[in-house]
Image 1 (cartoon, rainbow, N blue to C red):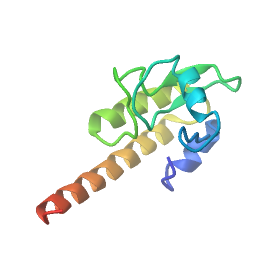
Image 2 (image 1 turned 45 degrees about the horizontal axis):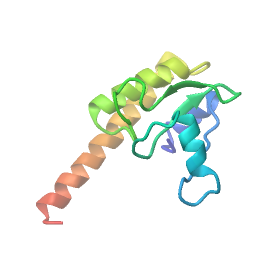
Image 3 (image 1 turned 90 degrees about the horizontal axis):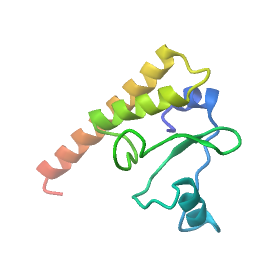
Image 4 (image 1 turned 90 degrees about the vertical axis):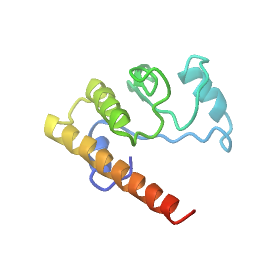
Length: 120
């Protein structure tokens, strides 16, 4: 979310709020409330209305926790979630965010393969 080509776009419509469920008082309770008591992995995210009403979350379209999207399918799912929640982000900007995530995912996969080949 902090990629230089992503953050300014997301900042047009969203205020990012990071909640650490281990280190912040009430963090786990907030996660439980936002997830409706459902369990799953972290990281997890939700796009909300200003009053906290959920619009879409990382579980909505993927059938499980999307987490930090990096595979092609996860990035496309993230793009659909972002499309549902956006207000001022244009279609061109949305496509650029999705492409940035695709590129970051490809770099991460290449690094993983390189590490495996090196025996790490």
